[in-house]
Length: 326
Ligand code: SAM
Ligand code: SF4
Image (cartoon, rainbow, N blue to C red; front, side, top):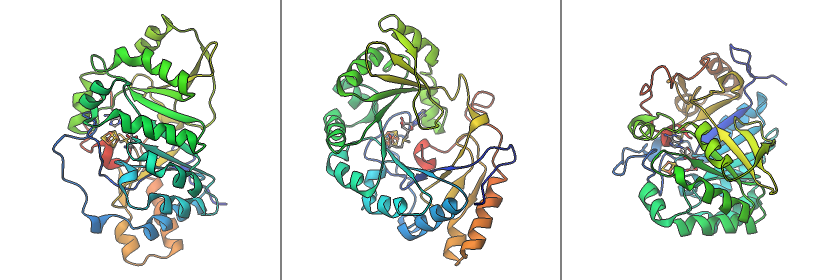
C-alpha cells in the first residue's frame, strides 16, 4: 500500500475530521461568547464528500480517524456518518471528541455505529465553575458520561484544560471523580489559538506545576496507554487511574506528529499551529476522480511544516480551535 510521508520523514496516518465549527457551549478559551461567524451550510462537506476524502486517506495508509469540531454532536445524524467511516476499508480506529452535552441521547447509537473510543472535555467538577467556563450545565455532561459508560465505551478519556486561577485547584477533585468512575484523565496546557486562546494564555500554567501539586496528595508512578497520541502517562498508585499530560507548549511533540486536520469546509490543515493548508472542496465539487484526489492529498502533505511556533510567535494563529478541529 502507498504510504503518506511528509518532507521530514513523518508517516501521516491519522486524520482529525471536523464535522462542524458550531458548538452548544462557549468555552471562553475556545470560542467568543457572541461569536456567530460560522461557515455557511453550503460550504460544509456533505457526508458523501467526507467519505470520499477519508476513503482517499485510507487508500494512502490512514488507519485512524477522530471526529471532532466545534461540537460534533450538533451535526445532524452524526452516528450515520460514523457508520459510513467505520465501514471504509483500512479505517480500524474511529474515535470521537465531544463536550458530552448531547451524549446521553447519542451514546448507544454511536457505539453501534463503530465509534471505538471517546474523549470528553471537562475542565471542572464544580457546576458553578462549569457554567463560568463554558456557559452550560454540568449535569448534562455527567449524564452523557454515565450514558457512555452504560453503552460500553471503555476507556473514556476526560480532557481537562488546566488554567491558572481558573481551575488549577480542581485537579485533585477531578482525579477523585475519575477514580470513582473509572475514567482516564488527561491534563492539557492552553494553546494560543485565536483571540480566545490569547485570553487562555494569560492563564497558562505548565503541567510540571500540576504534577508537582498532585504529587503532594497522590503517589504517581510511570504508566503507559495504547493509542499513539502525544500524551505522557502516569498512574496513581493503588488505583486503576491513568493520568495523561499533554504539553504542546512546555515540551512540544512535533517531531512525532502523524496527523492532519480536515475542517468542515473541506480545508486540509497540515499543522494546528500554522496556516499551511489546501482546499479540497473545490476539487470535490469540480468532479475530481479518485486518482487525482489521492495525488492532491499527496501534494498537500509536502506542505506540512516541521513544527508549530506557539512559543516563538505567540498570537500568530488567528483561527479558533473550533474552526480547525481541536
Ligand atoms: N467540542 C469538542 C470538545 O470540547 O471536546 C471537540 C472540539 S474542542 C475544540 C477539542 C479540544 O480542544 C477540547 O478538549 C478543548 O478543551 C480544546 N481546546 C480548545 N481551545 C483550546 C485552547 N486555546 N488551548 C488548549 N486546548 C483548547
Ligand atoms: Fe465547544 Fe469544545 Fe470549543 Fe468548548 S472546547 S467551545 S465544547 S468546541
